[in-house]
Length: 622
Image: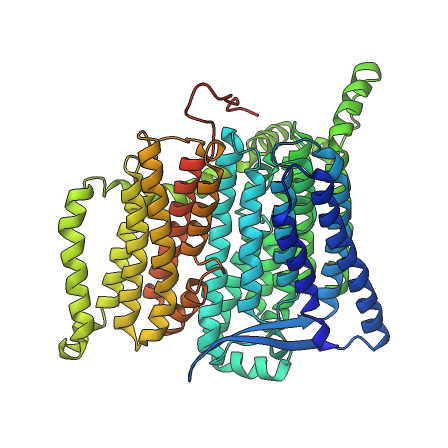
């Protein structure tokens, strides 16, 4: 049966490619291809699941493709199938099919009709790669596809201010989850000395033996997995992004943030359960985090004035309970709970426009006060305090800004003196000196050489921070992003024996995508002389082709799996030793801020209200 697993990915991939080739004005063909792709996938997959159940439901593992292999490293695509994959597949396929059929009529004559269905199929492809992944590397491919499709659907109304702003905010949280997963993969390489498959993680004896001798390493991997899962599933302290993600069309809100995408964090915990099940602190942390998220999200949902926000926080509360169930080892209950919550939230979001009108009519003609609830048992001051905290959403946005984004912005502002001229005078000689240290590293004393990789990574971090805070020169910001990758490559080359062919794998995508993006920006500057990063320009309206290719350049530069840079990032971390926590943290921070800077450049240049006044401009509020 193993050889059938790759068809779960090939069918949605074929549908996605066909949908790209269709004429955007042919709504009937676009919607039919999308519905047929997911419908056929659901039928064939259901038959496979029934056959698998009657065959005593064995765990299936298939090593599909070795992408890159050296004497000490192997990057492979691996597929895995068990009861978790089966549940997520059946729920995902059924809900996706219903949402696609619903969207055929809901989005009729909408300007971005084809773009919506293309993105849904792209999401569905990434979802299937994720749930059928057999190792961290394959899972990360689907994980990244879910992230970028989320960004594109939140910013579906790309001529409006708030959808674009919230899409960038959600992407920033997703980027934290990405780096958590990358760091878990990094330390996992050093723990297992291979790209461990999930099939091997089910071997209790093997896992227990490794963790007995490497307790701290196991704890680090588990914490990184928890951070990635919490960010993806909107658990504390990342809960505030989910209602902001409801800026997209109602069908995308239903399939993404009510049912499927928001439960991928639960999937990650279930898939890695056998790794951390004997780590009591991790189980306690997952359970406490889930219960805390449930209590806070329940209170917030009860005071929301928007029905979409109510549903979003109610979904967060239920996912918190599922986190606690997974921590207790109640897997079957967690899977059943996931399916029930996914179907319920999808239904609630799809009927929410009708519910609003119904409730308004009922309140106008048949108003009756709410019955007393549990809060009335509390003292008056406690009730008022709890109410105000929930109305302010426990200031979750403010906490994230205070602890994370504001410090980054504050550090970035200290480099405002570093304009284009000073940067050339400082960074080019510094990079030449760095290259010289790599060429003659054997002649540098060891007590000095061991600090140079951290110094070079710090230089890259300074450059990407400056790019993140740049508001005037869009070319300068883009070049700083590209140079950040050069500094990281230099740092790892000096840190370890980084073969030339591996560095070429990493830098090939950086150079090609960086050059493509710079060329498009130069062309845009010729056409639109006022181009800067101080505001949203909305140029996708007049230059959709340039926006599409610039998006591809952005994705390639961030390490999205369309260029060899994706493999190169994994190779980079494989050459950071397990005791070099500072270097790993700096490189991870570089990737976080790098992704934010890239998506900020793309959003500011091509999305948002158009700068030209003869185009319609949407209000900032929604």
